[in-house]
Image 1 (cartoon, one colour):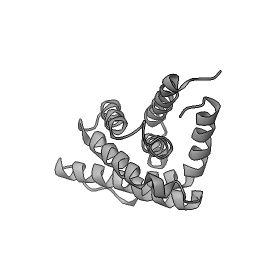
Image 2: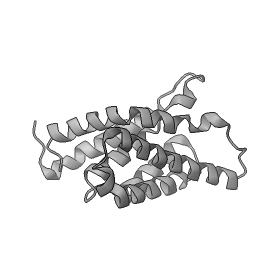
Image 3: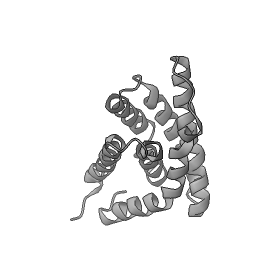
Image 4: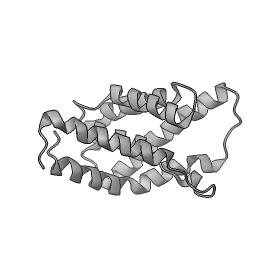
Length: 162
């Protein structure tokens, strides 16, 4: 099945829906700290791959949906993902040229920024500070980046999303 440019948005939307679903899938208590930031990874990929189609608006929309699905303060993830998309768009020409291991380090920094903003908002609302395991999703996202990149690039090529 070949999707045209007008239908390529469905593939992008589908990947965001899958990322949101992976974010809310119940996990045992011991595995919850290891859940990667699926929405952040998908947003970074699409902002790098198609900066003219996916940008700050997608970050804001995905962030609002993430806020609603996870029950966090409305706008918390929207703010963080909007900034994540903005920075990814600003760096996309440079990061696309990096080998995957360097892209993974950039992804680590972007995901840590996402978590730092969330921690800041939680601190403002009076929630207690987190321990070191709070940063594990960023590290796992960095490790998963080459696989996510290959998977989403394969989808993009298979359905001719451009």
